[in-house]
Image (cartoon, protein in one colour):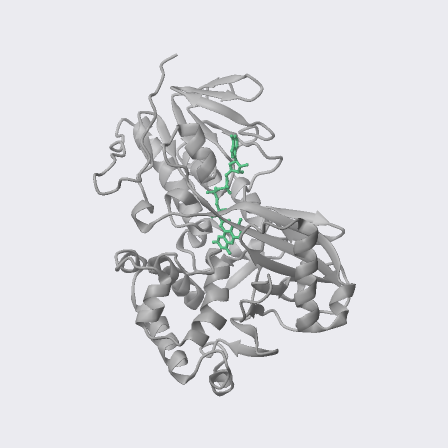
Length: 437
Ligand SMILES: Cc1cc2nc3c(=O)[nH]c(=O)nc-3n(C[C@H](O)[C@H](O)[C@H](O)COP(=O)(O)OP(=O)(O)OC[C@H]3O[C@@H](n4cnc5c(N)ncnc54)[C@H](O)[C@@H]3O)c2cc1C
């Protein structure tokens, strides 16, 4: 396509959802992707018959945008059992979700993972978020999750043994510094739906979304080197002309391409995958480390959730280590093995390491002030992605769609106002000088 109406840089969920909004209105576009497949951070590798998501992640089926855009039946979503198994005091404690497994209520009351009052407080949060709309949650007081949980007087045991590994694992933030608004939103999503993975791996999500894009509209293995007014320059030197450009890359790369003064910083994470002959857990429930000792934050046997994740007779164990370990990979693996031996005995030594993923840019660090920022930066220039919204699959998809719709409005002669930097938002990025050549 020589002169498309729009060039979109990046074919992650945001870029694809932006393209889908353009397709709806018959607007032509070219999607430029540096990787060899679409999906960005939502990718799955096939290794020795195992499906390895690039980093442990789940789709929360209640995400409003996913409900609108995805066909769950065709994805064959496979759900985790609600609740968690917590490892602490040298034992495993099963904490099912009492609202979904009513008979379990009494057994979960008497564990070292928080006391009776903690369970009562948890039920109050659940009820509160179920009664609030997403808009009300996003308009509520902006304090950190840890501050909010302390205000609610959760015990230290409940914070350390449940919230830190559980919410820390979802937000990649074990200190729970992330906004309480995001916590409440995610908690609402957990309460209203399932945490699930598609039968064929997380990559099935972007694959399904991209199915409706016209043939030839996506160029893979092409890295954008720079952009300037109405021009996108690829690393090969080729220059694409377009009156409308959408930058849909991850935050740090968007900052580079757009010349933002402030680079979006990231939360990092490592995922290790092991193959085992016997599963360490016999149900599709997440295992959390309720102790700060050892590198493991959470563990799941993926084929217990979705059988296709492992070949017959084998089991796929996914292990999450938060952050970016300064140690070499080999040392991280042996420390993880040491902890697993502690948990499951010598049998863990027999597990075969399939792959270790280090993901530097797991989630962007964004404050609620930056959520849902208008995406029009200048005439014909837009930005979208999870760093412009809530850092999640929901945020990326919604930000992409809204941006596509904003581009359509500009094409129809009804452009949105250009984003202004407010005095009280000093950290918001400034636009660079936009050269004219
Ligand atoms: C390990 C991990 C666990 C997660 N867990 C969850 C979870 O459980 N639930 C949840 O909702 N969310 C989770 N997320 C977050 C979710 O995956 C992301 O928020 C979402 O996928 C971001 O999509 P995006 O389109 O904004 O960005 P990306 O997916 O990063 O897409 C950006 C695209 O731009 C391309 N690109 C970059 N630079 C260039 C360039 N110069 N030229 C061309 N192309 C370029 C990249 O290759 C990429 O394909 C997790 C993320 C990770 C990494």
